[in-house]
Image (cartoon, rainbow, N blue to C red; front, side, top):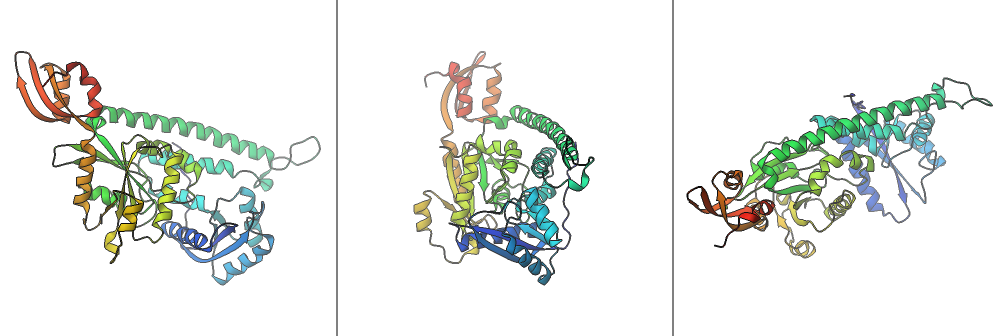
Length: 424
């Protein structure tokens, strides 16, 4: 496997740039820059200043207007910054022009997110997905930066400056991308094969989805007694984590934790992590976890909904809104939230408040995924063992070579049992 090249930010001090397009409010820009600051903090970078310019469109070469470049350089000097970070994805030409004009390294929101992803990926599949996204990003940023690396002179009848090097680099990256996709596909197939071998394939799957740092991993640990690593930062969960949740009723399900969502989540990342996010697409119930202490939680939920639509999980799948971190609020008016999000549950995954009520709700949901059947089976049938392992057996009568079983079985098993159903 090709090693992922990471950009290491050590004691960096950054100036954040943003374009306020017509129709965007001051509050929207402030919130986006605040989030950029949190991303930088997670990447061990301190944001020491910001510059915002109102424009109708982004300039092709400079991102901001030409008159703003001197102001950027002055702000960098005043804040003793050594990095410029744009709150949008920049082109190779924009990065190159700003760097040449200011003499300061430039990166964008996407490269910061890629850096965080690279640091937190721990499984082989997660690392492959990060590397795939990084390579796709590099491929998009080859144009315009290779004049000094040309192997040929420009002129009539010959290729222009940098073109040979550019084509070579494109070919190398495309070959790496092909190999990465093949490796990732094999990794996904191996994971799915293992999943099919497990009894978990009959379980109802609850996917924890939500904005990054909403407390999904903390909730997973609280519900299942697991010990998934928890960090106070953005994108600290990249690799899918699934744990069994047993209910007092005897039913059980699988709770799956997933990568957090965010505004302006690059399409290349969503594409690279599609294999991970397929657990969301294939789950029966989405537990949408939201940090209720965030004053902008409604905007966060909108961003989550947009990503769910992009990955194909925005349909009629059952949703349960879980408003987390109520321990951070002294007074919370729940009525307007209940009106907007019927059936919402309020909890603190950290303290455990409200979690019992959530578990009760989940058991009610999972009860609808079971059906009671009366069955007559051969004692030698493999289905008997499967029923004993996955169903709630209410009665069983063993006879000569046969067994009568009344059981509450997962709906996923019903089709295989239809030929053995008998009258009560």
